[in-house]
Length: 80
Image (cartoon, rainbow, N blue to C red):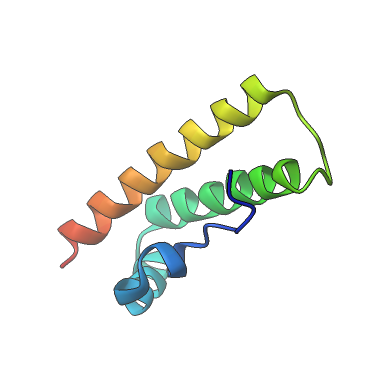
């Protein structure tokens, strides 16, 4: 288990500018990014025991983060 935050800029280092541009131009993309950040922060708080949660809930949050990351990756790819 990693206690390192999975920030989008770290996940997609070559797409920093594209992420910024899409957040400004595409409201759906901006909502996905915000939701990703919310889930990611919740996972980090759970991992570091700042806000402990049940293991099953943490697993569910990880799956949600992965699904959001996949959607974001598809949108970044389509914008290329």
